Structures are given as C-alpha cells and as structure tokens.
Image 1 (cartoon, rainbow, N blue to C red):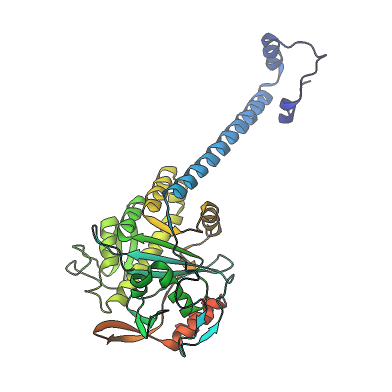
Image 2: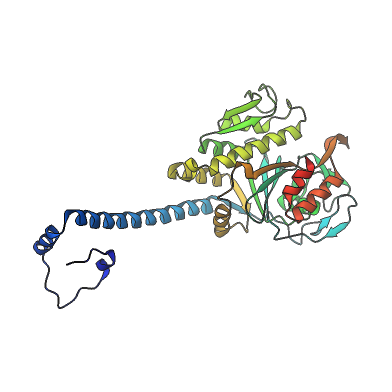
Length: 365
C-alpha cells in the first residue's frame, strides 16, 4: 500500500519501479479510501498555501523595509569632536563636569519637530522630546523639554533657550546640549515637521486624543475647536491641536503636554493590530511617515528593523510622560523663558543614567 506521509513526496524515484501512467495514478487514487484521499489533498494544499504565504510575507516585509530605507533622508545630526562643549555630564547645580556619558543603560532617541510653515526656513526646533526606552524594552518615557527652557549651551556664555542651540549649531549642538544636561548618550535622532505629523495621522485613519484644556480655534493653532476631554482628530485637526499655545493656561508647557498626548495616541494607533496587520494601511503609513522624516546617519536598515521588533510588545500603559523639571516661568534678556529646576534636572539625569525612570516617576508624583 502507498504511504500517505508528506515526506514520501520528496523521495527520488526508484529506477526499477514499474512505470506509472496517468491512468494507473487515477486507478491507485480511486482505490484509496475517500477520507484518506481528502486528508492527503488537504495536507498538500495546506503545505502549498503555507509556502506561498511565507514567500508573500518575506517579500512584503522586504518591500516595507526597502520603502522606509529609501524614503528616509539622512543627515549628520549626532555630535562629534567639532561640536562645542565636549562630551560629558555637567551637573546642572554647579555647571561642573560630573562624569562621562552613560551608554548601554536603555536607549535614547531624540525626536525633533519643526513648526515651520511652507516657505519658511527651518531654523528652530519647536518639539524636543527625548524617548528613553528601558533596557528590557518594556517601558518608554517621553521626556518633553520645553523649547523655552533656559539651559547652558556648550560653547556659549551663560544660559539661553534650549531651542536656540538648534539655531546656533543645528541638531548636533542641540544633542550635545541635552547630553550635557542628562548625562546619557543620545543614540539616534529623528526629525520631522508638523506637516509630517499631519500626513502620518491621516495615514492611520486619525487619532483619539485627550485634551486637558479646551481651545476655541482663535489662537495660533488654527481654526479648529478642541473640547476638554476626548477628541477624534484627522491630520489637519491634529496639527491645530499640537500647535496651539496662546489659549492654554501655561503656554509652551501646556502645548508640550498636548504634543505628548498626541505622540502617545499616534504610537498606539501605529502599534494597533488593525494597522500592523493591514498591508495597505501599513505600507501607506511607512511610505508617508518616512517621506517626511530625517534620521541620523547611523540609523540604517538593520537598526530600523531591530527597533521595530524590539518594541512590538509596547502598549499604552507602558508609555509614560515626563516634562523636564522646571521651577516656573520668567524673563531674561527681554525673552520669556521657562526656568530650569537645577536640582530636579540632576535627579532626572541620575534616573536616566541608572535606567530607573519608574523610580523617578514614583518620586515625582
């Protein structure tokens, strides 16, 4: 009797075996019990379908990865020896060097966003968010640095607004400024503009964002009314949501909290199964998102892949908001500023250097 095992299909033919014609195959097949024939055909069909699915998955993954890699613009955005100030942690309380930069205690990715309108020259960074991913890849802390935070800038006398470092020396000087403040190495930089935020929001079908404060659309965000509580926003509405600050109680601080809420909503939508498992939606998201994005030169294809895989289990409760420590609002040299809490910044630096943001969050409540 013939064997029904699938590995028999791969055995070489016996040269001494009798010639099997189509007619004899049909006769042998007809002689098999119907149930066994159905099982054998189902197993063969399943094997073929599985192979085709695997090939399609690999091809699709390569397509998505290639699209992202080809679309991304790359710039030298990490500091080198020519960047002023020198690498190292400087204690905010004294301004003196307190240690070398820590690496390997989690990963730190700096997200920069520009609010430049079409036709404007991009010379400032209006969104400065340091994402700290813990070493276990189970927690993400989004640390918002208000653009008016008054900080020491390497190579400059005294203190200045943190986003002025971008104007003075581009992303490398801004990175060095942050590294000196928090004492950890920034591993990667991702830069986009607010138009990119809008396009990515539309690509995922909109986001649902919680607003701590309402705004009536007559401020600087644009003619979009936001109610206190939950808001379902398309790209244009989300753009108004993250731009508004004039109608908010704490100006840039409040706007930063809106930007954090938007980033969390967007991350959750991107990580949602309906996005990840929908080839059309996901490929469009990758295409649109990467077309509006610039990354540092070390953010290559393999890094992109490993980042995506390492964060695949992150959920909403794993994403935490932190605002860089400040002690109030004030003025300096005729500018409105956010006054840095030097002792609080020291504590934040210690938490980042020890990869212990959960402890820092608990103490800060």
